[in-house]
Image (tube, rainbow, N blue to C red):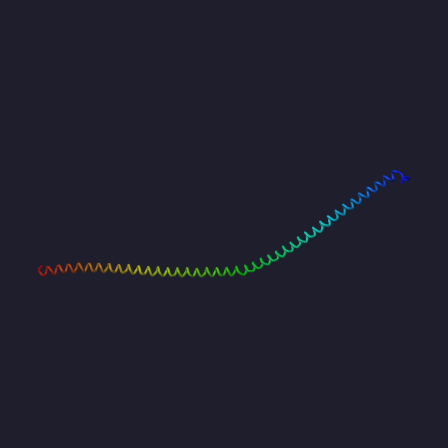
Length: 152
């Protein structure tokens, strides 16, 4: 090897060093590729999990929509029925109140009539008392006259 010039040896040494560096870079690139592949696999797994969760959320939303629709249907059916039941109840209560008002009016009319009868009876009794008092005075007066006619 001595018949080669020195610069060739230097070039060969440089090439050897470059080969080592290239091999090292190839190893690093392979490591990076492996890390990227692992990250891609992990991302794919995470993405599959997210897709699964999203599908589950969509199913839950579909169930919730169905439940909301069912509740809306029940509400649409139940509200008019409730409104009708309430109106019927209000009508019955108003009828009862009207009946009570009528009973009260009848009772007041009966009470007024009874009070008028009592007043009328009192006035009649007062009139009879006056007549009785007048008759009693007349009887006393007549008794006094009879007594004086008898000599006494």
